[in-house]
Image (cartoon, rainbow, N blue to C red; front, side):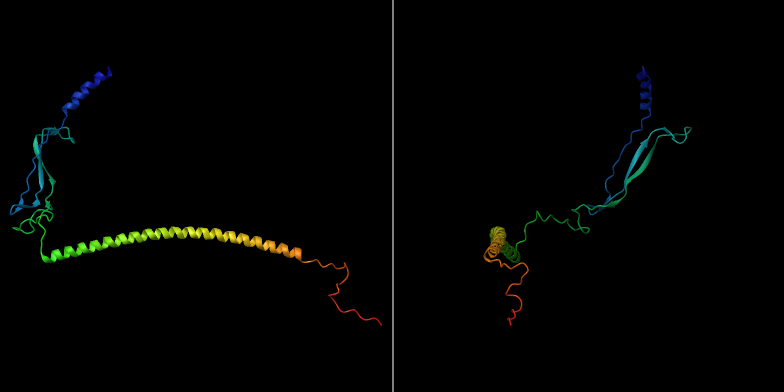
Length: 194
C-alpha cells in the first residue's frame, strides 16, 4: 500500500526535467596562409525553456538562449605548421632520405670501427673479470684454510708448552732441607774451633 503512494511522486519528478540543450561547436578561424595559428574561443548557445525563478516563485522566465564561453582563445602548438608564414612544414626526419656525402660516410665508418673496438675490449674485459672472480674465490678459500691452520698451530703450541712445563717439573729434583736449618750453600762459613 505504501508503494502506491510513491507512484504519483514519480510522475511529479518527471514533469520537472531540465530543457534540452543544443551545442554548436565552432571551427578555428585564425589562419595564416591556410595554417591554423590560434584556436578561437568556443562559445556555446544553450536554449532554455520556461522556468520559475528559483529565488522568487512569483517570477517566470520565458524561453531564451544563454551564451557561454566554454574555452578561451589559445595558441595551436601542434606540429606540422610552418615556422613563418609561407614556409613549408618541416618533414619528419624518420621518413626523409639520409644525406650522403664523403664526410658523413667517413664519420659512419669511424663510428663502426670504434664500436667494433669497444665490443672486442668488452669481451676481453669480461674474460679478465671471469678470471678475477675465479682467483678471488681461490683467495677466499686460501684465507679460510690459513685461518684454520693458524688456529691449529696455536692449539699445538699451547699443548707443547704444557708438555714442556710438565717435563721440567719431573726432571728437576727437589732439594730437601731441614726444617729449621739453613742449607750449607747459604750463609757464612762456619768458624774454626779453637
